Length: 561
Image (cartoon, rainbow, N blue to C red; front, side, top):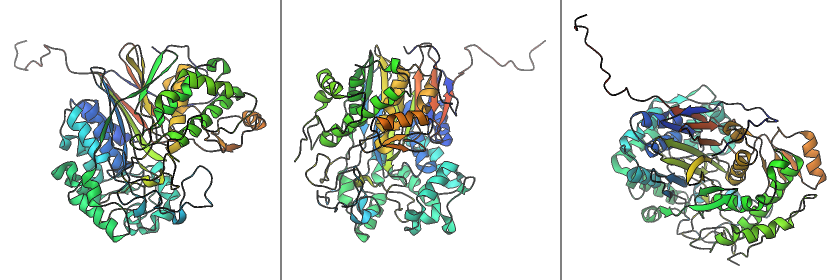
């Protein structure tokens, strides 16, 4: 499958991988990983574990994911079939292309509007899909009940858990916005002070919301009591989402998108998930270069990645959106001829500005889980409420934090990704499963908004070209650009930064690019290897061992000696 000598890194890894033979759960919080493992230990499958982990993440990583978010779940079933359950956010019916006024002072590449109305508060909320998608995934492909898989989440919501430094930092960084809403501030900034690492967080209102879901099922949100509470709050605060929007929401089943790279098949959700499409596009361009010979982190290697990222973002902006509204040119973007055309335009000696090479069809923050079981079921799922803490308020009395998904759509009319009633939100998510000769070798994903799919691309290249270990691949220093500045993590040397600047790149040193990646590698001997990186609280937990041998007995003490 993937075999190479150990890679000697110019960087050190922070964490250690985990190994198992009967299952592996990797999430961005140890309690969520433990919740998934609990389901595997109880005889459940990877889907049971994934849904338990997602409900638990809505409690212990509330700034990233929740019932009022959206996302994509990429499943590979034991029979080898791939399926995608899309629970992406949708524009309410009261939204139009001119609902928001673009901010004329906004930095290039952003979607800022006057008054931040598309990013903060009730006006920013799209119709959520997470709860429906999680329940459907469990009903169709799980083996345990909704009550079984929700128990860990209920436990941590009602009894509390110890806050991590990562959660505390997220609260502190967004405190100014959170303090605008008394409800969310009372939970995360009690007495006006951000929750500190080591403090215990109890979410009683949210625990009651989870109990309501248990009693009423997903219908509690899509027309029931939770939906009514959300709609009433919207009506009282100039929001656009209505109870009719919630009642009309449906998830989508999508055919998996497939791309190839050096004999491997890279699979993931199709548009409106943009990540796998543009990963496939970039890999097709990179296939014509000897990336391995360039070496990881070299000036040539980083320059090439930066140029390829800019090409992908130019094309994404022009033509990638909800395929129900815009005919996305998938075949062209993944074609060898188009890759050849773009490859020939790359100048290895200087940075360039890139225009789209496809014709427009019209005039982040997140979490990820990767789960596998011994029967061959794999779940690679990325879920979000978009920004950290979403729209940064709570629906009164429920503990639910709504998404601010409308910030992802272009507030300027006439673009491929412009706002429109009923339009599904485009996403940079990249819940990937990589195959060789039809057999899985890798599953991965991460949070991070626009930095998701470029980071996932780099992990794939790290493994397939540079021969890194799984832990090295997820922790390796990353770069990012969409054309305005080249972000570099601290592990890149000053000499590399200076050489890239000399080629015309505007270097922007950052503490981290994207969020915590987690991944599973499938070894030929049946072992599952899980890894998570330093950029979040990611924790892999492997399940090995098993039941006693057939015929084993515990003999009674009364047996004659």
